Length: 125
Image (tube, rainbow, N blue to C red; front, side):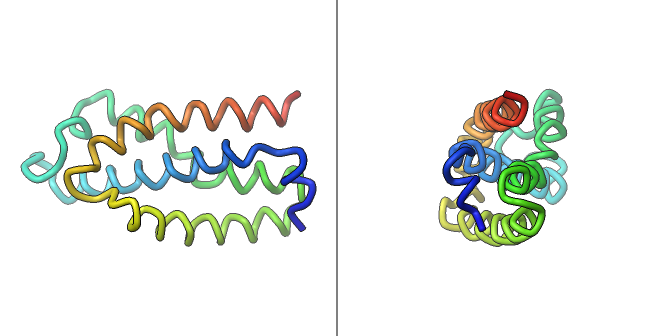
């Protein structure tokens, strides 16, 4: 089912987008739970951080579209389900919550544009 994607696609782009999407969703969740920034990293309270959070919204669906463009729409739907569940588990394993959220946020701000570029350059090449 995923043979064409494995041979022609970029797994690194999918990993970067899933990581960035999950970190940004955790940052949005923390921003909503702590509106005054008492127990959350101050980097997610900066006004420019809201732009990065908004720009990362396609990270939730673009990996599935990318995989589906190579292996078909059924593989895209299956990969979306697997990536959502796997991303949540990896978010817990990597301890994205708590004081490390600021560091993960910085890495995610770097990761999702690279993931976008790798996936879109493969699709339009």
